[in-house]
Amino acid sequence: MLAEVSPSLTELTKAASDFTADGKRLRPAFAYWGYVAAAGQDAMPAAIWPMISAFELLHAGVLIHDDVLDAAELRRGLPTMHRRFEAWHRIQGGSGDSTEFGRAMAVVLGDELLVWSDELASSAGLESESWRRARRFWHLMRTEVNSGQVLDLWAQYQVGSEEATSAKQIAEKVLEEKTSRYTVQRPVQFGAAAGGADEIVLETLGRYGLALGRAFQLRDDLLGVFAPQEQTGKPEAGDLVEGKRTVLLALALAGLDGQDRKHLNALVGHALDDIQVARARELITASGAVAKVEDLIEADYAIALDVLHECELTAPGRIALIALARQCVQRSF
Image (tube, rainbow, N blue to C red; front, side, top):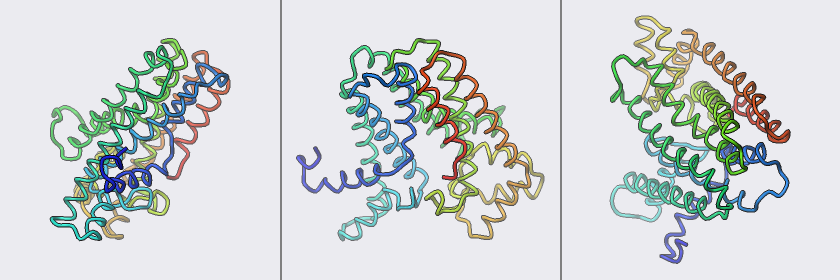
């Protein structure tokens, strides 16, 4: 499509193709198995495949924008899109600032992916009644992930929050809006609604998705501090460097006293050498935050599994949703 506008725009589509070639594919998986949980696998509509692919395009656009906001260097072991376009600007001998060009191009590419995702979703050919039932979850997800991004920025820059709200409460709200609903709850509800699930099933799967989405992000918070780069494809302790005010960090700061709290707080939001990364990890562990987060993950995982038995689901759907839950919490990347 872009090549028809100008052959030079193929660089944008190539970047989009490269970026979407990898990833966990969790959101399409939850949408697919949500459909199966409601309707079974017989007579699966052909439209389900482009429909669930729309979730991945949306996710790609969100990730590219997220990397720009975080000034992130790596994603999935490769340079982030803004760094890729920055390098391309230098190779092309372009005029102006290559860093600014890279950021601008990444924002535009993210916008394109968001537009394409909505085009794909709305034109996938899902039967009209199925689309009518499911589209509210598609629209909710798109609004919620952007709202969560705003809350994440406010938390990172420590603005816009009421004084009575604790750092942990703020981090939990960001987690819920930016990740939990967007990663699990809305995709699984979308699929189930498209498959004809009633409101009882949709509400039950909503509770499954919210609990599991929390557990997923809490695991991500631990990996974002403790996992090596070769495991995650991101810089080590990237969440600390980027100043992410996660539940893990909130619990760690609350669990430390005096100079230790000041020391950890001073490390957040800055480039760290190996010694500083090791010290930050030591402080977080000593605070008891790691153990508390593991307990929260286990509790939410248990909730997610329990609620799957509260409503009528197909056997293949229930089995797959249990397996996906395990995949979300017992992972190393």
